[in-house]
Amino acid sequence: MVDVWMKLRGALRNFCGAHGGNVAVTFAFATIPVIGLVGASFDYSHANAIKADVQSALDSTALMLSKDAATLSSSDLQVKALAIFTALFNKPNEATIDSVGASYTTAPGSQLVISASVDVPTTFLRVLGPSSMQTITVTGASTAKWGSKRLRVALVLDNTGSMADAGKMTALQSATQSLLNQLKNAANTNGDVYVSIVPFVKDVDLGSANYASDWIDWTSWNANNGNCSVWGYRSQNSCTNHGGTWTVASHSNWNGCVVDRGDASGPNTNNYDTNVAPSVTTITATLYAAEQYSSCPQAAMGLSYDWTGMSNLVNNMSPAGNTNQAIGLQVGWMTLAGGGPFTVPPMDPYHTYQQVIILLTDGLNTQDRWYTSQNSIDARQQITCDNIKAAGITLYTIQVNTSGDPTSTLLQNCASSSDKFFLLTSASGIVTVFNQIGTDLTKLRVAE
Image 1 (cartoon, helix red, strand yellow):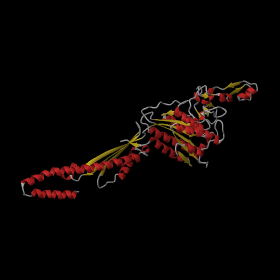
Image 2 (cartoon, helix red, strand yellow):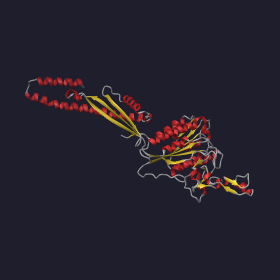
Image 3 (cartoon, rainbow, N blue to C red):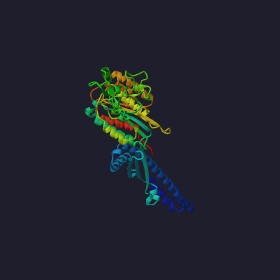
Image 4 (spheres, rainbow, N blue to C red):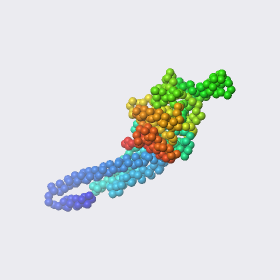
């Protein structure tokens, strides 16, 4: 293009030197601004094309860097942004990178902003114009934001005794803390993301401070916790059979553990162990039956954005007890639906919501309120899974199989889809999977 312009300038010089007539000379001078305008149009058109390339490279840089932005220092963020943008914007003969900037903020809401400035050499303007027109500066910026929907996530986490093996509990705690940070950073304002946490074993802990609540069935607990006036007898029936007087222990001594909802003799026809029907004081099967289980886990926490409280709960989790995924899943669903000990914040009709349950376990079911048969417990849990999915809740299931157990058909069938079931053979995989799920839930997007 420069050679063409040099030839054109030479022709103009020769034309101006000709003496064929004043009209010709006048016309020649009149064409100069016209040619200048055409040349300027070419330069600016080229600069606009470069600007489009700059924006494309910025968008890609923002998305690529977003995976690590939260863990990088400000200086490292700048260095990495420059390296990624330089690799993507590879036009050494058409533009020179002047600067690349990067900033990551978490309030309000997490966002990553990448900006760049490049200089585009001109072709026509550098001949006709002053030195300031030797280049055209092109700038651009791209903002990546987290969270396009409001989220409500229930974490249903295995705290059974086998979680002490192979570093599983430590890995679960680390993975959960990272996931909580991802979810926290996805919130633009408090309430955009709510999380509940339900540690489970054979029982679930609904909080000993709730001992005066009307959603508790004390029948079995009263029969097994107290004192008999006849020495040597601890159960109510034995005391009565031997002529003693049974004095029930204060409910304030309850450790918070409950067993599956239903009748003492087994699940009733209304399947309260598999649904979230409200607790009704006149219908015993809808209540949570208290039990003084010696391996009671950490108390479940309802929907909250108390990130410090959630972090403390996770740090205090400790493995003990047998496995009953079914009760953990039912209580996890209850934290989203509300009822019993759980109050659910109302949903804003002007926003869309995604409700999610993440169930992680390292073992197969071994014991619930009524059964020690895995098949019997699995059958109850499958009903719960089907009900959860029918309610429009996304269900992730994770089996941490470090002991060579069979792959759980139950967990595969419970997951909302095949890509939402994860089979792990090492504890380290928990961190990877939780990060993958967190990234999927927070749905990073380029906003500007």
